[in-house]
Length: 272
Image 1 (cartoon, rainbow, N blue to C red):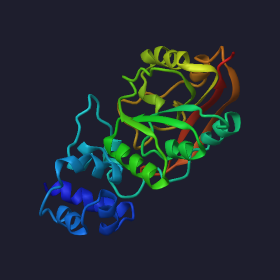
Image 2: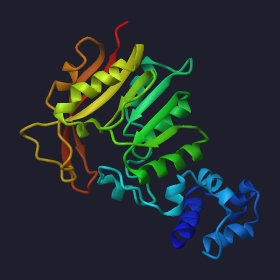
Image 3: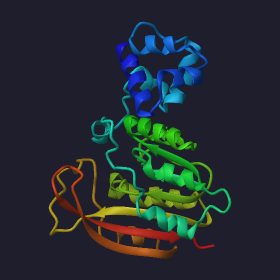
């Protein structure tokens, strides 16, 4: 289990833990941890889940199993490095949520396509009860480690945006840089479903990439993605109360090649 040994060592170092500290958390000897990391032995089966939890990763991820979801994502490779691909600063849209729906009581928040979890963990640190999903298992592994390091709990799970039909009711639904994976034929259906599962007076904070004829395609644009039309997002929220609706063009170098995006930003309240 060479992959397991490498994963234990890599994840432990990423969390800033010594072998002794990890051993103490698991009530085993430091020598046992050393043997795991040097591929000399495996932990008892009863310890695997606890070890995965301490390292902020799924059991499959710890064992080196790569899931085969129905649809792959280019970000699986981009999230493979030690550093966080999107950095650590929360999206500015998060502050609209804080301003308009401060967590003075427990508020349920759903993050659609959370990536490496920077926004989901930010919300959890602020006091929201956060559920978040993404297609990338590597992104989720890093998100779990981020939550563990921050000392917060987030209900992370792996899922495709095209398949998720949330149950229950949320006070806030948040999506940044993910809704272009919804094809035009699915957008109304999916957004109406999210609206139906939003509490009265609830908030949606969303942004979408918009197609403009004067902007060339981004160098890292993925083939399954479909850009939105200007104003298309607002049309789907015609009965909601707008707190923010704007269109911006911004510079980006996420691929290492400078380019520009156009984005529509919407923050809207469900009318009571």
